[in-house]
Length: 317
Image (cartoon, rainbow, N blue to C red; front, side, top):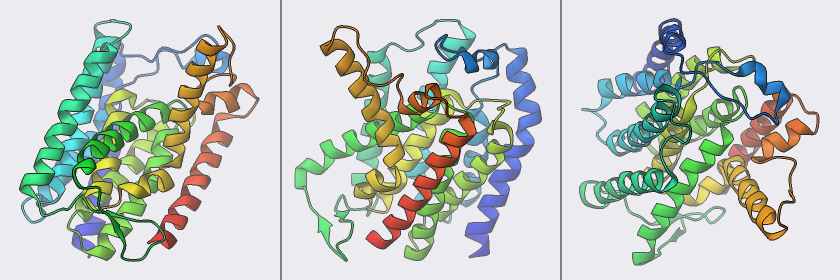
């Protein structure tokens, strides 16, 4: 138990934490700074803060996973989806902050890459693992949902939706990191209890995020960028599928879902009313911020909500 739990947490934490004093100055030297929206006056002071710090998280997760990959081959699909989406995010960040292409990847390019990465994951899951696409039904003991051929399209929706949900959540110092470390702890506990064989990578993500939070809590010295947020979204979705728990994502990842829905509502309402806004700003964490809430208060609230939702998810098993 110590080997597959404590060692991954401590190893990934050490790599992520120790890489900070190296990676952050390097990113600052490359001038890969964050740009902020003018509507958020309190964020203007953050302009220039290094982004792409998700590389620190990925370094911890990848190196730690490689130690365990031979004994725990079930971590391969989770590692692939995490690194695959991290690579998409890295390319987007690189185009935006290094090559100064303001839009980064075009929307269709990003979506195409996400579909390709998800497709490879689905193919591997179906042909190279014994993991079924049957899904545990929350609050129904030992009951599974069988969608037959419909399970594959749902997988694409669940994976890409989760990835973009985490991406939208990354907007305040420590927000996506704090919420996702709780989700990672939830999946780690389930993985350990079920002896699923994925606990080294879920625990590695916990450790890597804790190390990253040393530099990402308010006031942040580095942001994860799309490199980190897309990678973490891939991790959450892959872990859920390896545990046959995608139906639990709306519970433990409710914050992600609310962030996405707030953007959809804002855009739809803006178009329908020819310029009016439903929220002060979307994603919804900015709505609270413009309402006078401090970043630390919002992060604390969202983290507490996620912790309670994880407890609810435990009861739903």
